[in-house]
Image (cartoon, rainbow, N blue to C red; front, side, top):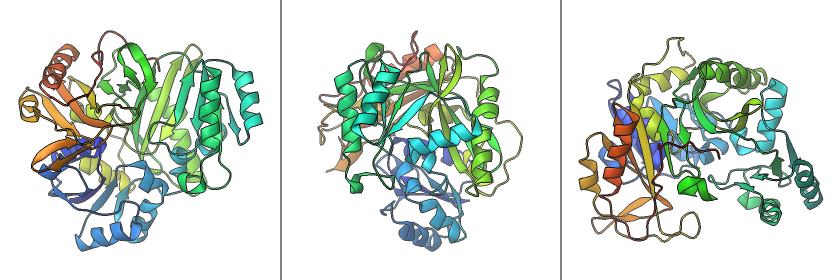
Length: 427
């Protein structure tokens, strides 16, 4: 099986590693890829928002399956163009991708499908924002309606900060928005309790859950600091209630997949269920329509079922009811962030110690925001690397991951030291 993987971040590097472990995957192309994926397959430069270019590449290379990693090309409708060309693709079409592209649309689907979620108001004016903030009270949860690269949500007890973020969302120019029509912002009630992520592979009718994971959004130890795209993650989660995965499939994922099928826009791809275990029960925080980053980095190393074969089955509408196979171990992922992240990021700093870090048993170094200049790996984004360790126990995985992180040198960088520790992330 020849696979074309679309994307260039840490998620795609983690996917490439897992796809390469599948004996059925004979060749892997990554477009455009990154320095880490270059050793796993062939990196090919392409505009990932140009559906015609992706179709042409897939046809020229006689690709069996296209796997779309990031959300932006899915929201842009790339998967529709690939399917129309008669090529199998893992990733939802444009209409189904609105589950991530528009939080207002996701709320509409959840309401129709009777999916438990936070109470919310969709606001298009400053007066509506003021009224919604007064209604829900602090802590304030303000979400950009469209895509925002993991930075569209503000959770704060500072009303002025909440207002500022809401006004910025409403002031977006048309060229900066992923949704059509008037810009909108979603104001929600605050959900107490820990959050977790559950990935569900879907073939338009059936849902197969993966292993739950938890990521850490705040920039600093103790869940302090601003929200980020994710500073680390771990799996499995020993603290979740028995039967939770089955409950999520029955009350969340399957009803959403059924509703999308009913509308004639079947969901084929990865439904990311962001969840909160509140004092009032299970609630959906958000949906994404692709593998999450950094949770992918800890879920896929534990998956023993061949990934490429699984994704092809979903793309062809023939998921079986057989449960997936998992290792008995644990995985921990720590993100090494560039100077200034999640604010103004400094790039171009040399990354040293990668070979030494990779020598720690059970460790993979995932490239997320890197480039190669004069034979040196340099920082080229906010989240530069993800260091992932798999081991027989959570304690061993955590020891290995920090041993590896400490061998990497990147001037001005920072990382959290409490990923997978005693505490769990509540935001």
